[in-house]
Length: 235
Image 1 (tube, helix red, strand yellow):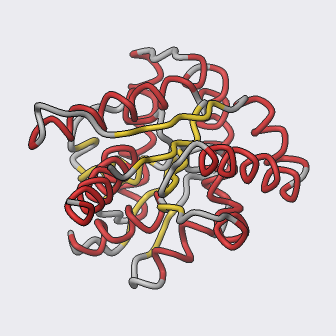
Image 2 (cartoon, one colour):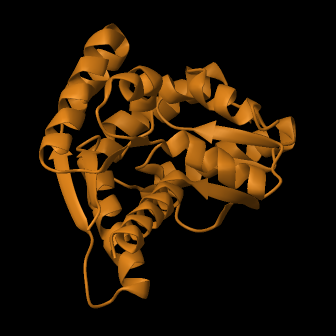
């Protein structure tokens, strides 16, 4: 059986969500079995510090996790977070197992839906980095970010609430109001939940009358597809 290696802990709540979603999706077609998964849980605070201060050290930190997973028999690896994709290309070039990108997976779905201009939400690092605009841009899709003030607020609640497993109605309402403002001002036609904790706050297929791209759900779908392909090949 093909084995998934999951770089987790970035943060813990989303890792739990990944694990549960993978099992649920697998059992839709294979109820009598479960997929083979190895999880290496990292320290989200250390990872965020490295994102802000030392990208080379971040690559090394993530690479060590990928190599541990490879040593545990993983056939491919996924990172259960968006922000670490800041160094995805450097990581993929050095890893000894294939990596499955959450950003590529999301861009493929946005293209399939015919979206042209999407709002990106996530940590400040994700919202301000070039990796989403570059990957989406190859498919002719424009990525819009909130204002600097809004990015600061979103990053704050992400780190101080969501990564701690706190999901408040007041936060949800404020975030929806930001999305509504941007929908009217920027003519966006979709919202990318570019943080794997965000689907735990903004549940549903739409928000502010816009379709949602749930990066967790899309990544999980691609993960399960890869697991099933491996199982078919081995049988």
